[in-house]
Image (cartoon, rainbow, N blue to C red; front, top):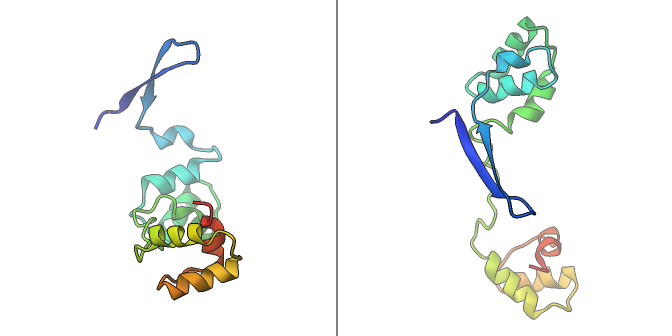
Length: 131
């Protein structure tokens, strides 16, 4: 994998712009800065919570376990293993049913969807009724 990538775009004046984007960084350059702990977490998803906290302590960075847990998910390889959108595959049909019944309240739409074999919460219906 290359360490840099060329990024090109056309600006509003029609001029072609080109920039080199760094894809690799050395986190040692960020020691003592606010983002150092996050960069360390990102670079070491294989380390345990305890190992990360102990290493940060050796560098003079004090963080709590709860701080680490609230942020580590962003960099963990399994971060997207949570609930999946459209798990049952009926979202397209649900939106079609809601379009056909656009004058109904949220509660009534939930009932109509259930009658059609589609289980959705009132919050889901509220968020997707205009899709």
